[in-house]
Image 1 (cartoon, rainbow, N blue to C red):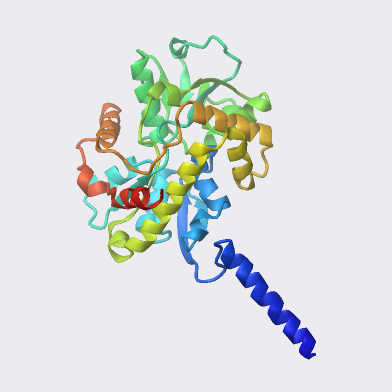
Image 2 (cartoon, rainbow, N blue to C red; image 1 turned 90 degrees about the vertical axis):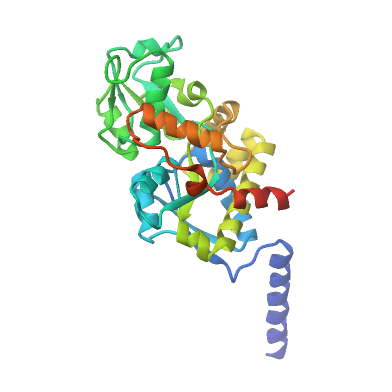
Length: 334
């Protein structure tokens, strides 16, 4: 009995030393409830931070949920259902302009542009944006980033939304693939990996990238309540550190390596599809290399929203965005 007890103690101590040596702590992790706007390869640096243990290195245990829309993510943040939201920065602009006292503050940016792809019912290797004249595009919720950037791209390519092209903004993003497959609309905008899956099944075909056409736009970022930052800045710093580690990892690894790393987040998609989707995003500079939301980009975003008719007044960068956590992460993690 004594030998058995001694053996169990040795095994326990050995396991503890191994886990400590690997930088993994099984206890004393702080749970962080994170709501993402949708689940997409578009957010690869976040999933890399999860699968490679970067959050755990910072002492955080992430409870990830799919909010299925920026409006729902923001509601969850403001009501205290989650600690951190991940969606378009436009959601924070809307809340601030509504006059809410404990508004949301953006503290880290993840993506550098639009992550959707325009899909049609037939292959179109010679697609031109003018092909959309007289057509209907399913563009997502009114006032959301997908619909806003779609209008921006149409305007850049000489088309007038509402006149030359009809944009259907009556549905949430999660419902759009099914609606298109069911016969609604002539075109639809879809994130990866859903876009490639639909194409593989012959249900829709990628004809253009909105990310390539729009250029750099602060598309998705992390935010939390102003009061949360005041009460627990250490938590926000640790979270930002992990995100920056994920960004650096993605920037320094191949599409194949990234696809393998994020595979646990997309178990139903084959590896070749993941590699193809990651490669598309890397080639169009979708993944931001650092978490700082620049002032010029923030005001460009608001100009795009104003041009889309969804914003009456400009919100101040200094109130809605803080870069101190991103700057500290970049300074300390070299």
